[in-house]
Image (cartoon, rainbow, N blue to C red; front, side, top):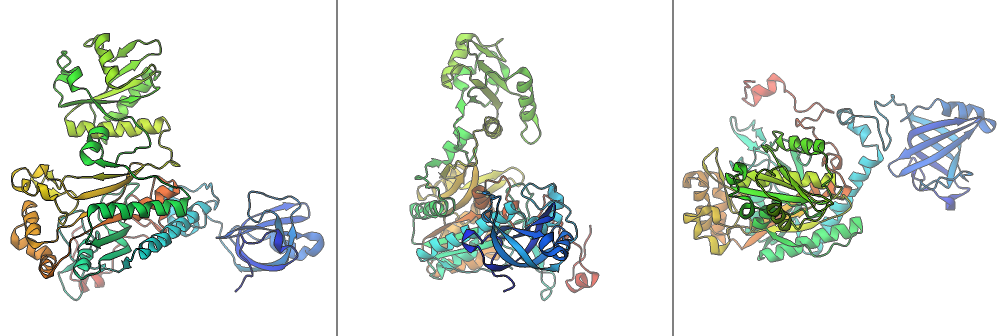
Length: 581
């Protein structure tokens, strides 16, 4: 080894030892005839000291060092006269006796400090430098710890880690596939897996009754803070289990991770029906760190001559406690925020419960104070509360009010990143109607089993069929989802029929799976956790990018290696591909 110790290892017990350290120059300081240098590796920082009275030539060599030079130093461990309790090595310093420059470095384009002056795009271009910063490195160490604990927990429960193919068959359901041309099969393409779904079901048919892998998945979707074109799942499948078994095992996994990695003991996770989540929060992934549940007002406000309420399918609101003092300017700003195209509300009605007990609304022309008291009672409002109300078509207005609820939660500092509110959302609809294609799509995927008691409704009321499906939600983010699967060919064929597949299309796309079901498929189910999302919650981040070593930007580009990029004409000819861009 080129070093005897790391830069985060030495302490007062090493006094008097001669040691060799290697690392990067963090910074240097000259104080009179003495030069101090901080040398860094991924384990920490150690202070070096060089004195002109001891070795002027060596000190002059040290003064020529620039930031991020790679060096090797040998010297004696001394006790610092001015200790730094914020550093693990803050009680000691190294009196340098030998100094070797292993590699010089250009001046970095941004400060490699915890608080950097580099913007997001600049840091992405020089990601290998950004990864030297403590916050990013610590995120990846955290991710490593989580992966080790996942493997430990599942292996102790007899799960087997099995790798599944990366070059697979494109299927029409779900998000867009990334496709890969096949040179040996001109005109034909592989797809990169959106998930290992069909393979893990085939593993169940094969008798591997407990499977998992920490696996890369690929989806050609529009990007956002919690979405990347390539992402990582903790993918799991089990045979001979019920939904209850799966919820218990993977609630156990989540609690294990919080206990081992965050030293947090979570209580039993609550469960919420999908229908209740939509009714009370307008979202299938509600943030339960704060209340502000929806209150429906149709029975109270209709029939008073106010056309916006009278013509609405749903009038619904929330109670922003302690906000009655919002100014007119603040209310106008909040209304404009709701009108943005991303949300699309046409306006907002409000009522103040003033500290003197009076009630004042933006529609006083239509509602007396006695009628406003009924509003206050419906919301359990108290003095200084502010009631915010939206009206319109039910599905749209619930989604808009969900956005408003989350925004108010943020403005009132109710979304504490150090507080964790997990829950299971269960009993999702099996199907959802797509206006564009004018047909039903699977809300999860085509292999999700309907609840046995709802199968008869597939032909008469398909929108009412519930799935044996479940999502794990933490702090308003979907962390994982899964279902009990269909395991017999007849029910799977019926499902394909209701999804608009002809028997020939179903056989072409999924014949291998339907054929496998004829050879003794066990009852099975599973779940997949979004590993990047879970890691970002553990790290207290809003974006998953900084728990991924080399992420893409919002355009799906890796600006560091300039990818995606064109390929040589000879490669295009060999692959029998022409572009029409």
